[in-house]
View (spheres, rainbow, N blue to C red):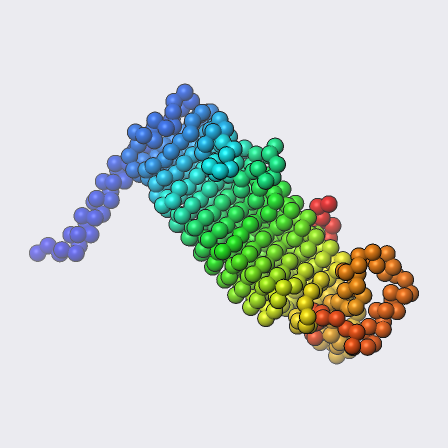
Length: 419
């Protein structure tokens, strides 16, 4: 007697084998048109494009793989999107995608992934002189890996598009890309459950410009020589770890209206503000190296109930600039300007560390006072403030300052500025 479940499985397997066997490979050579091959292909087919220059704007409206051999160039001649994906399960790899239009209103892009184009994969491409490198909208599980994106460098920054723009997506994986000379490197809005890993972003406005997005991971990215590094705003349930953010002219990592997130093991070096923390609560900030910034952390706007421990604050011109009405406790960090002692040999200072005093607050309000920092009058004022608690100002207080940093390589990050 025929076993029906086994027979059904056999039928499905045979159908899959027929489908695979039916998939065709189309070759395109210089002088031929990629668009014609896309029109002729069936879903599941592969189109192999050989090295050459192809002057056309493409729309991919079926499930196909577009693979370049020898880095063929698809040139949009400064009009519209160079490639527009309108179908799920499209794969593109190995191309130079150049010269989109420059219409910000139309959001011209090198590759535009239209709503519903789920599971698009874009790998190992160079997107050159495009307004937006990639615009990805209302699509799930898109993967963007190993691409190089260089924007329209001759335009003023406000007139450029972003390197990769995600809007209303889920499950995106943005891995191993290099982005430069766009407006913002990666712009993320209303996009959740995404992974941003091992990307390199430099010479843009914001390395990341990010808001209204939840349950995302930023891991191992290198972000340098921008106006600002990682700007994470109006977000929760983020993991921001192992990033190297240095030499940015404003802030390294901005946390603005962020909650229930973990920010750990990042290197933040040589920025104007290492961390800028505003309206940020119930987060864990641990194991970070904050070194050589003009201000290590600019902290204000009700940023309380955060667990801040195990960080190294080393040779920042100002360790903490704190603007609030009450002290906030950050126990268990290392401060390079801590002058306490450890008589019991525990590795923990015997007296608390306070990050600011009356003189610090005075210099923030009246910067001209800095020219008198070494004068007897100012030093006397600092001593008097220490002796009389009524003259104390609100400060970050570490009741258990560590005597040694946990990052043995911290000196390698000194001088990583971009002036």
